[in-house]
Length: 95
Image (cartoon, rainbow, N blue to C red):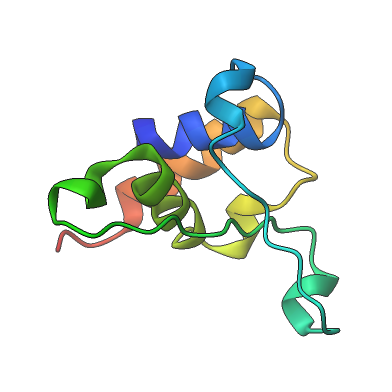
């Protein structure tokens, strides 16, 4: 949950620039249904080792992209995002 909050802050310029610069927004070259929504997708960083999978450039976009489109929507303010994220994690079944 904390990771998703930090990614939200990076995507919407609420985090320090050095952290936000690690993430890259995905821009599709084609017209897709997901491009029509206001949801932001992030490009996954690459990791060569299992240790590297925990890096913010890999784990952040992975956590963000796994959220439902309704939570990633750009029309949400910070407080609405926190409420939706909390509801999502409370209602989601444990893996």
